[in-house]
Structure formats: structure tokens, C-alpha cells
Image 1 (cartoon, rainbow over the protein chains, first blue to last red):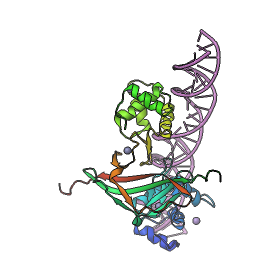
Image 2 (image 1 turned 30 degrees about the vertical axis):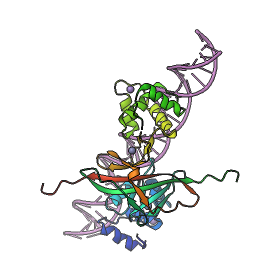
Image 3 (image 1 turned 90 degrees about the vertical axis):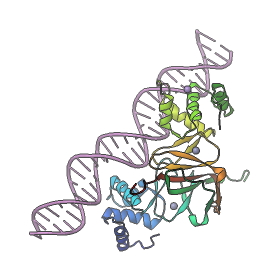
Image 4 (image 1 turned 90 degrees about the horizontal axis):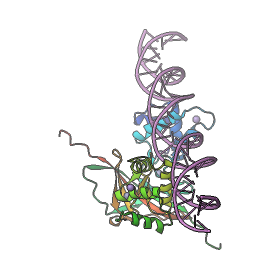
Length: 143
Length: 143
DNA sequence: GATACGAATTGGACTCTGTCTAATCCCATC
DNA sequence: GATGGGATTAGACAGAGTCCAATTCGTATC
Ligand SMILES: [Mn+2]
Ligand SMILES: [Mn+2]
Ligand SMILES: [Zn+2]
Ligand SMILES: [Zn+2]
């Protein structure tokens, strides 16, 4: 969890991962880590170019892929339409509102999975996702 | 779990859900229930048209959506690239091999989730997915 | 300051999954 | 064998994401 969003700190966070801190990468990291929300590539593109266009779609995709490969952010696959990028890399799970698209974190510490079967032979674990799909409660009938 | 793949039984399975058993729908149901595998829309299209083309892409998408809406099959979202359709509608979870794309079922009976936090206020549960991402074990070094 | 060079960025074409629509087809009923 | 409504269809379309060759950037060296 990155709490210091200053330019100097973002530079060192990128450098720690061997990522050259270019202007575009800094802007994208800033968008992700200042908000700590689950953003799609298109949302990142729009936020980065909010004032005036300065970063291309190709660079946003290049950079998000680079951030994922280096473990700076995590992909969240809950919706068939698009990938979300999650600046929270601590182990955790998600609520997903299938109507609004809203994604909410669930602390992994709080949850235990009992009776998990052995991995298929010849396979090694690469991660676990728990997704609780929710929808807005229907208003009480007659209310 | 549908064990009888005879034409007559598929007709009655569709009728039970209020789905008119057209030739194309029967073929698609047959492809899904005779294999009991997790298939993408494109795989269904190719399998249905294996011999000679008889069903359009539009009909495959229409029919899969209809099957999902009526609870005959279930969508599995594990891969950003495409949706898989699962003829197993019993509650269960999945192993997903991120390299081969192979999907394997995990019986939900065997697994218990302890300490699940309360749903966000105003939300009602619509389902839970557990996805264990795996990859082929690296060959032993020096072997 | 000018030059050189590898790395990063870019526009735009392209692929792929999935949606939409208007025309046509199918088929049960009369 | 006409009628009518649902199902199917081709193909245009939309949106996410990839790819590539050309350009630009940042930095190191002179
Ligand atoms: Mn800025
Ligand atoms: Mn068949
Ligand atoms: Zn998250
Ligand atoms: Zn399954």
C-alpha cells in the first residue's frame, strides 16, 4: 500500500521494480495510487488525459502490462467486457456489483478456505480469486 | 447434470425451461451436454458446424444467452479474452490453468468459506466464484 | 551546445469477441 | 395453401486490446 504519492516517492517505487520513471509512467502510477480504485484501461486513459491529451492508448496498455508483470498492480477479472487494474497488491478478494460494476475489496485475512482440494497433478498454484457477485437489494414490496 | 443425451430427453429439458426446441438449439445443447466441458462461444460454433455449416454465429450467441438466462448453463469468467459456458450448474468452483487455458471443476461441497464478511449494505448476494489459478509445474532443475 | 543511441512513445491499422438489425425462413395453425 | 409470429441469418457494427514501423525522448559523450 503506497501512501506517499509524491513525485519523488513514485520515482523510487518504479525504480525498485526496474521500471524507468518516464513522464507517462509517472502519470499512470499517480492515477492508480492516488485513487486506490479498481480502474479499467480506458478509465486510466481518460484520467491521465483529463486536462489535455498527453498519453496514448498504446502507452497506457504497455504500461499497465508492465506494472502487472512487475507486481506493481494486479489484474482483476470479474467482468467479461474488460479487465480492471488494482493498485492493492495485498492478498484480498472482491465484491462485484453486477449491475453498477462497482468493485469492493474483501480483506483476505478475514477469510479462510477450508477443504481446498489438492491441485491437479503437475500443476502449481499461481493465485486464488474469490469473487462475490452482488446486486442492489430489491426495494421492499409495497414500500 | 444431464446424463441422457437422447434427442427426446433434450427436447423435454428445453421445454421444461420454456425454450422452443429448434434444430439449432438442439444441436447447441447436444454439444454442451454430451461433452460437459467448459466451451467458449467460438468453440461451440465450430463444434456445431463441424461437418457442414448449419448454424450462424448470431444464433450461437442468442442461444447461449438464452441458456444462461434460463439457468440451463452458467457463464465462467476466468479469462479476459472470452467467456466460457459451463453445462454443470451445480454449485462448484474452478481451477484455471493460465498457460493452457484448461478449466477443471472443484466440487463446492468439499469447500467451506469461513469468516466471509457481511455484504455491503443494500446489496444482496447473486453468486460466488472461487478461481484457483494454476500453471504447469516447472520441471525439476537439473532433471 | 551538438551528436549519437537505445529505450519509450505514438497513430493507426488490425484482430477478436460480442451485439444489433432488417430481411428471410420456418412451422404450427387455420 | 394462406397467415402470422417466432427463430435464424448475413453482415455491418462496436469496443477492448494488440501490433508495428516511424518518431521522439532522455541521457551520455564529446
Ligand atoms: Mn499530470
Ligand atoms: Mn448433433
Ligand atoms: Zn481489489
Ligand atoms: Zn465448471
